[in-house]
Image (cartoon, rainbow, N blue to C red; front, side, top):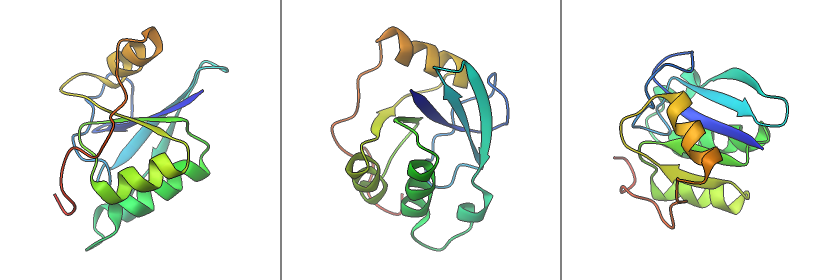
Length: 119
């Protein structure tokens, strides 16, 4: 399984970024290979609109199965779930903690967006 986590930094001790589409980068963990990689998202950060949609499409192209973020708007949520990606919205924690919680089964997938568009 590939898990993408919106991150304020580029290592697993970084905090989970509260914004999905405007996160500067995503830490992607491949649980089969036990490997981490950084996926930059800087091109979407300054878009006047559509950042969540573009980010979601990029992560689907990366082959992710799950996204962990602070908040996810309705357009990004529709793109992600339409692409077979589960979305998990979490509070303050590190990237590593969030992935560990998902892998242990203690995170519950979101059943809808948790903020309005252009949040």
